[in-house]
Image (cartoon, rainbow, N blue to C red; front, side):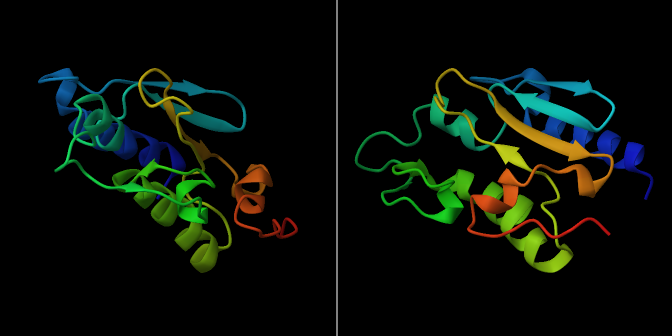
Length: 143
């Protein structure tokens, strides 16, 4: 599919995840475009980060936090378990199957304040090596 169509579909998906900006702690996002990529900044993202801000990870019956630092927690301890699916789906599995991360992601440093950021590169060869290196992998040479 044309890459612009993918961006429009991703925006529609985030709009749905964000509940169209309604309900408690509504999700919100912005899209920026430059010569090499589209950047989606979600603050909060409409899924894992929204759950965090709604207090769903707190208390005895709260959602799990992954205690240890692992590749699927972006090397961070006490990482929200729901947010691990971004590392798996957007980066780890797509690197294994396609050779590049489909939606390279920068999770928020502070889930209470910072945005979660996804990138959609117009040319996968332009994706920075850091999105492989954090998994102990080397970015393949451009084709």
